[in-house]
Amino acid sequence: MKNFTFYNPVKIIFGKGTIEKIGAEAAVHGKTALLVYGKGSIKKNGVYAAVTQSLKASGLAFVEHEGVKSNPVLAHTREGIKKARENKCDLVIAAGGGSVIDESKAIAAGFKYSGDVWDFFSGKTAIKDAMPLLTVLTIPATGSEMNCGFVITNEETSQKFNAASPCSFPKVSIMDPLVTITLPKTQTANGAVDALAHIVEGYFTTKDKDAAITDELVHAIARSVIAGTDRILANPEDYNARASMMWSATLALNGLQALGYGGGSFINHAIEHSLSALYDIAHGAGLAIVMPAWFKYDLKISGPERLAKFGRSVFGVAAASDKEAAERTIASFEKWFSKIGAPLKLSEVKIPAADIPKIAENAMGLITKWGIDCDRTSVEDILRKAV
Ligand code: NZQ
Ligand code: ZN
Image (cartoon, rainbow, N blue to C red; front, side, top):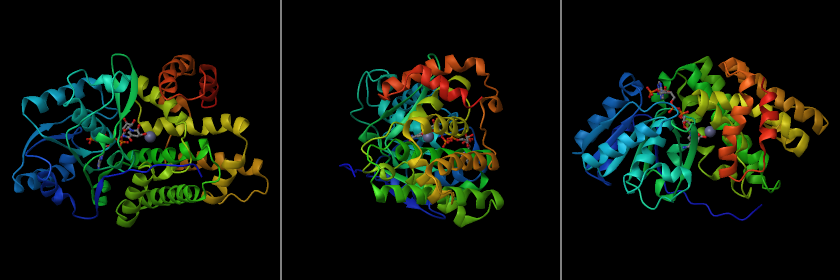
């Protein structure tokens, strides 16, 4: 088990009816909020009404920044920073999914910086300060509610890049599983695949294969995500399944999932981000295409041991040899992704195989930024396994 430092200061308020606490929590951090949300789901499912009533009851003023799109973009982020400055906001409230929370993190940091917010993503400068951010999560998926990372697409350059800073942890995240009942099945599936991908990245690229507690945590999160999703798809009103799913996705990327691994490569994310940057597909859908392809590619390099261990614990794979168990594990991922309606092939999201060189070229941007040992030809090889 490798050395680690774990730091996570996010206050989590979890459960039914908790959104009404947002006003009192926000009042601790400021007086005028920039209220950031997406394309309207929060107005249909009561989250908007609950948040705004609570803010008013606690005496907070707020200015709305709506219209954050899935795979949030730089231009809308810059508008948010401008609006926050014009209205002298002193905190940000994100009500939505990973896209809304990520754009809010970028606005909170960009507000405090005199240069262009893209400098944080290009690596030109580090984040030194940010407005306080509180979140009301509406979809289990990214873990953004309890981590300090965020992702924005520069629509001019087609770069979907991340930034991160200890300043960007939310102060408070409110998680009411009831509000996820209105999620369409495709978004439930996308979120589940993303949560699985977050634990897969560290588990399969660990620098220490004997970090037993973290391996066991990963197995438990994976089993919970799979069982929770199956229950939700069978009965969308199953509250305990919604609750378990929501917390599982948070645990999948709040730092705990990789302690003792000594770093992981996030190669599937590096490749997926080029798919969602170039074709604006959902992040989870892109990961469902990339992950099995990468497993098949990596099996020849890393050998079957980790895949076999994961499959035996998570999917109940019973094969005697590691080689057979590894192959059955990959097949189990594919079978389950298909069952929940996630795509497995590029053609299923209308991406032509002829575009593979262009996608690989784009992916090299993040692969280089993140220092991953993978060249363009290898990315092309991986993507060809998803044709
Ligand atoms: O825009 P609205 O109307 O709110 O609709 C959203 C959106 O269409 C809808 N939705 C959310 N909650 C709902 C709901 N619809 C009905 N009922 C609800 N309760 O779902 C759609 C997807 O929302 P989005 O926020 O885009 O999904 P997700 O949470 O998966 O976020 C994806 C973004 O996060 C980034 C991804 O790359 C992508 O840009 N990621 C962020 C990470 C992080 N900060 O740690 C890590 C991840 O690996 C990922 O890269
Ligand atoms: Zn992800």
